[in-house]
Length: 523
Image (cartoon, rainbow, N blue to C red; front, side, top):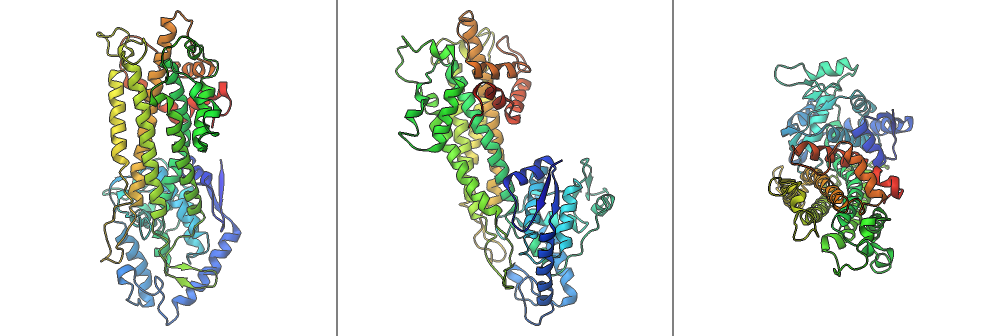
């Protein structure tokens, strides 16, 4: 099993994915633990000083003016976590919680937060034990950190709150066993929070950042898959591959993503007898935008994902807390917890996800319309009129696209003041991340429907030509993989399971892998 090491120098996007999705084990380097111990010693001195220090010997937020006596500070930390664990709604996905915890552990290990080594060690123990705190959908405004989500995680470290065990059993609910027993079964001792530690556990952009990194990974796969399904639609619609030749892209319009998508489509269409069949004698001058401009749309999406990765990489290198312990020993209040940089790119990605889905739906609709499909039967039905073919599959696709268009409305332009106007401008980055996750799922399903449609159109071309018109090697490889579990043309049948299976193949990377057997690695 993969092991990820937490050091004071941060982690990679791949590390986050490994822990969040693949249960990679986490260890803490001796160098990082030594740094955490050293900084904690400094915090202990400040805690016993007569000079008030924010978050160490004072209250928080709008209550920061109150000096807290030493014998009340443990209670202060407990009260902070308990009161901030105020989320509501459905529980978010396990991978989101694991990314959230891992990224907070990364910051705790940086030596900039002032916690004791036991705090970061306990968080890592919970991750490694497969214990997942229950984090609710609503509670974060994306400012002062993902407060409620991180608090729900911190509450579990205290042996309180709600969590699920590695087998999915729920603890901490009414009539259920307490979380302390779940920790005990894993050999984990709940922590008793000391000065500064409550703040350090909740002041971060970890939830929105984790969701951003996972969305980037998903979109990279889906954008390559979108190039594949677009190319198959070109074959299904008797389109041309000549608009994808390299001299029309980087030389004339130097957007890197566009050139990469055009190259993908050209290679998927290579040696296609269907494409070659109408290079001579075809009266059409040009294809519709949804075919001809596919690289321009998917390519712009690629470039936006690259920008988002740049922002995410910078955020991964950050040590976000408030107050933060500087190398010279100063403990300084700051605003680095504000999620604006992450929230903006989360919203950008929701826009491109919706648009790539939209153009894919247009290609699907074109293949189902006999007025525009160049000889294909209506709705690709086996017996049009008796059969409806893929008519309602396109309805589903249109519904998904419509949903994604609504999800593309930015969350980051909204702000509702909180904390008695102390926190008077917030990022809503958590909400930007939550809607992006749904938009990415929508895109995956839209591409699955285009895949089913385009491959059925190609199969029908082959049948109608008595086998003379058939796809290129890449298209044939994709169809072979799909047909192992999803049948081709024929009489109407229960379609939903077939679309779900196509969705699984798209999401698993099987469709990309099939195409790459013929093309070599795609971009």
